[in-house]
Structure formats: structure tokens, C-alpha cells
Amino acid sequence: MLLEKLAGVENRYEELNRLIAGHSGGDYSKIAEYSKERAVLEEIVAKFNEYKAVLKDLDEAQKMLATPDLKELAEAEIPHLEKRKEQLDEMMKQLLLPRDPRDDKSVIVEIRAGAGGDEAGIFAADLFRMYVRYSEGRNWKVDLMSANDTDRGGYKEVIFEVKGKGAFSRLKYESGVHRVQRVPLTESQGRIHTSTATVAVLAEVDEVEIDVPASDVKIDTYRASSAGGQNVQKNATAVRLTHVPSGLVVTCEDERSQTQNRLRAMGILRARLYDAAIEKRQKEASEARKLQIGSGDRSEKIRTYNYPQGRVTDHRIGVSVFNLSAVMQGGIDEFIDELATRDQAEKLAEAGV
Image (cartoon, rainbow, N blue to C red; front, side, top):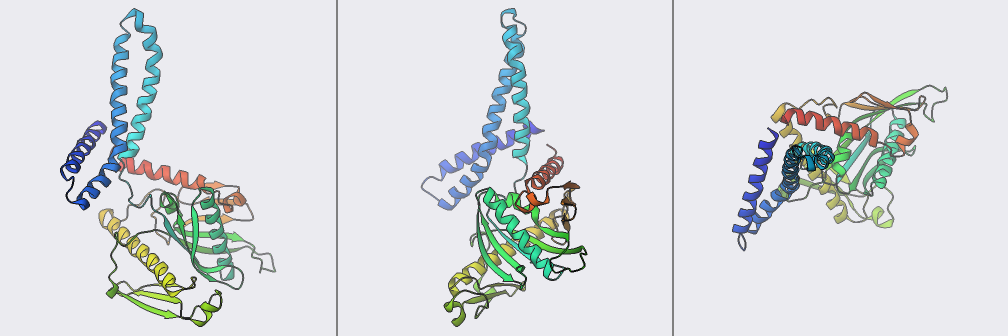
């Protein structure tokens, strides 16, 4: 089964090489399309070629066992070849999995305070800092796009961009409802409160990937309420975009010019529309594939941060760690690694490889 699929990939790769050669000096859009598909297949074909070479070497080593002068050499060589064969076998299974086209993209992350009043806003700010530190640890760039502050130093809503290769492939597992259990600073009786914040992780898209006709967007401008200097105070620099067909509304007022705010707002709107289109497509294909790691629904409670116990529990995988302070400093790889592993295992089972 695996070898059949790999042979099919190799045939398609060779066909793409012929198509690209046949279009030289012709349709550049077709060449770009073929080249993009070939780039995806290139690593699989390279590993398949190495795999075939290892199989050939292994077969020759097995035959050498029958020759007394070569037997010792073959016995030393065979374990290494078998180990490499197993490694390549696993690598190719992973490479054959259908790739999420969003995985290599940068992301837009939206965090909103949920139940819990001021404490929910403070928790939203804690999550924001957690993701900033996580991103810095992976050398990704974080850029604040929009923030709606609270009086207590939290956020009603904060939207930020994370730029870096593979950002979506990691942060996509953070979408959902995050819950905190702790004694708020405002609590005089020492009682533990439970508050929530929702996280939405959207792949950043450009105009080529999703077309938003100007006629579908209503644009309103107004004076920004956030701090931003005299220019923000006097001029109508803030922008509100309403996508008429869907009713989606995006506001942006953090930049000093109306043009900058409009560009940022359009970026957020495109990402939301693209995300909605992907979600609809996935539901139509498999009625929202229910992974063991969770449905991916943003209304799903995914993680609890329990401060009195110093514990963080991810409910999708049933994993608890007792290093809350490290987690809040961006140490979330333990969760993401396990979620990615289980996700891959389910996809492998579904693909039958």
C-alpha cells in the first residue's frame, strides 16, 4: 500500500517535470502552479529514492551472508540498513499525510475576555504575554494589531500577528476556551474564582488566496479612543469594516493613519473569511472530523490553569503538568507536541498508511 502510493507520487513528480519543460517560455501562471506542486512532492521523492537504495543495499547484504569471506561484513552492515529502512518508512508515512495548506503561514491571534469580569480581562493579558514569550523563543516576530484595554490592566480583546515559518502549524492547537482558577487581586475574601478567555488562531492570507470585492465591504471611519498622540485624537484615523454578506465586523484604531488601520483591518477580515471557508469545507467533507485531541471548536474548553495547585491541564489529551509558572512564560511545547503527535496518528490511521 505504502509503496504503491509512493510510486504514484514519483510518477506525478516526473510528469510535472515534463509539463514544466513543455511550458518553457509559455504560460507563466501554469509554470508557477506546476512548480509549487513539484516543490511539495520533492522531499517525498528524495526520501523514496533513498528508501529504494537502502532496500537494494539490504538485499545485497542478505546475499553476502552466503559468502564466508563477506559474511562478517554483511552482519555488521544489515542492522544499520534495517534501522535506516525503518526511519525512512516512518518519514515517508508522515510526508504522505495530506498537508494543511495553512501550516507554513504566519498567523493572526485573537484573544477575548470571557466570563469573569475584570479577572477575565487580566487573564486575557496573561495569555497574550504567554504567546509573545513562546513566539520569541521560536524567533517569530509579534506585532500588535488591535487592543481594547480594561481599567485593571487587562484586555477585553487583543489581536496580534505572529510572523514566522510554521507559526500556524504550532499555534493552531491553541484555539478554544482557556480557563483560569485563582484568587483575583480584587478578591478580599480569598475565594478562588473561575474565569475564561477565548483564543482564535487564524492563518494569514493575501489577496490572491481570498478575493474580497470592494462592493462587499462597508467602510466607516471615526476618531480613535486609544492613546496615540495628537494625530489620533484630532483626525478620524480609526476604521471599522463591515463585510456585508457575512455580517463580520473588524475595527482597527491602533495605527496613526487611516490607511494603515484600513490595511490592518482588511488583513484581519481576509483571515477570518478564509478561516470560515476552510471550516465550512472541513465540515462538509467529514462533518467536522472529531479528533481525540478535540473538535477544534472555539467553544470547546481546551485547557485549565489552576494557580493554587500550580497545575495546567489540557482536557483534549488529558495531560496535566505542575509547572504553571513555566507555562505562563511560554513553555507550552509539551502540550503542542503531544497534540501534534496524536493529530498525526489519527491522520495516518484515516489515510491507511
